[in-house]
Length: 277
Image (cartoon, rainbow, N blue to C red):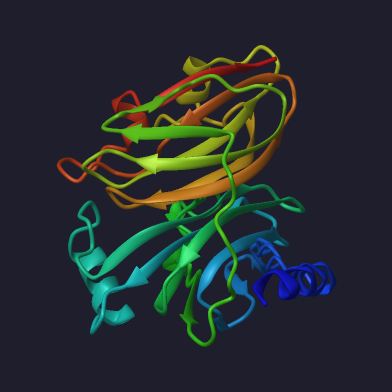
């Protein structure tokens, strides 16, 4: 009987519908959340979803601004962090983890960063000094904003970086960049908080002339244009940014104050000239 049933089994197999291959999961791009920076306030959503998110800052003010993002530790309040900052301006606030953020942008320009946001409470700060008010940091003029990350995760995935830049105490590595659009992963390997402030130098300007313009009593702005970068990242943290570079001479700098003596890291050698071809 088996030999009579065998042809029928073959026919049944031939007519059977092949098993369907499950569709491949489509990577979800990070949503873009936009905030405006004016003189001296941030405007934008008070609550955003957890997950990988592109934070874009549009500068509508008359001064340069950045948007540095910190996550409050559980049980910590903004008031406690501010009190700690005022008591020890050079210290690392115990109740705050720096998670990066949008680097400096001039008026009518923008910057951004890609950050993986865990649920919790966050605060956006601007620490850039006001040149019209004795260098008073914008945060002292009320330029900060509390944000809550909550709700259903957005499902986005981290981008694929074509370049990594590592931050240490006190250097950048590697220091080679090319013209074009790049997605860069920024990794803090140091023991202190670090940032990347990216500046395109004016023609003929050098790192020395840029630093000289930052010295006490110097007149005029530094000879270059801020073109973004990545805000402060606590030790062991990482962040991403997508940036388009044109040919020219750039500076990588870190202005975070040293926890020991308050001297900005840029004055401790954390400055690097990069020729983009």
